[in-house]
Length: 474
Image 1 (tube, rainbow, N blue to C red):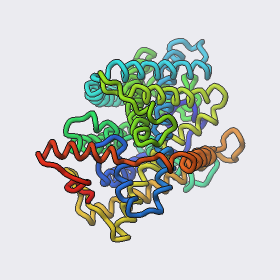
Image 2: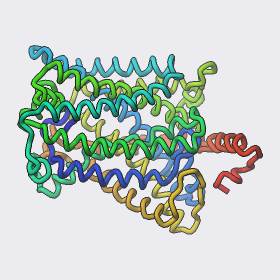
Image 3: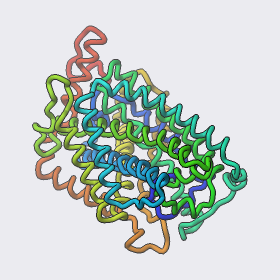
């Protein structure tokens, strides 16, 4: 409901649906983090590979799903750039109603966001930690300012019955199916909580700090997101007018309807736009490190080139540039078709969810096959609680991964069809061809990553570990 103009109509995502989905998803996120964060870039590859070694039938599947994971990260970056561009252009339209937003305007502004992220990632890698900490403070500040402002200035709030009880279905599907579609809004909003795991080789005390960041991002994101959704639903005006706002961003229209001030609405929108710009930088950093890790394991064409690390700043410059080019290519789809880019948005979420599900599948299979390996770390649940969380998290991830492929409007035609399943099929086909032609011969797996873990443990404990012994993988 709060996304950009790629949504032509609202789904049945009233607060009663979206907020429940947000709460359920919070628990599932915690469940999936039970797999733990390792001390290496590309930790999900590392983690799954340790169980895959015991379950050879999964080896080929992992080789193909690794590319899906990278597609999800890079598609999420392109989606974030698109959202940022819409927030910027939406403010321009609000300030100047005669200005009409064109699709090519959106793409070019998205390119500018990519360019800014590239500059920061290449020339200011030492600033990434400070920017992340500053963005956290900014995020919380913006949350408080936005909520207080719209609740204080809005004179025509909706009733509690409208927010929590009223159910409006614009999808053309049944109420139950519409409710399922509404849950997916929360799923999109709670992606990327694993981002710290892709930066572990550049963190101090990564085995503790990375999982701490992951868990805290789930808690903070879920709680603030729930409060934000409820507040916005109280302040929303006419649903149709909000959905068809000329700004292209329903949230900007809600800000304007609440404050009755162009300056006030632009100020609140700018608070969020800055968060989106910071997210663009973080997503490029995350995506490039994931690409670097895959190239380091010989999983990409020209892997030796893309796995190079710049000696002075110790950053994967070519992986950063490749990730930026891929994001720009995905944004370019919006030049020609809105439906096509909506598919990119769906891929970004489903790609992440499939990669989140894979470690859980490997862990559960290892338990049921009685070949389970304990991977000790600072953050652990009891075996029974861990198993329960893994099962619940996996069930939710698989459920949402299926429903991501459903169309959101009925009757279905070529303009509102959801082509996610076709896109995922193409990615899977490319993955299979790549695996059987080059990947199976060259893909080395996480052996270099294991060496990194070994070095860190040797440094921390003052003695050597050989062949993984003492690292929880013997």
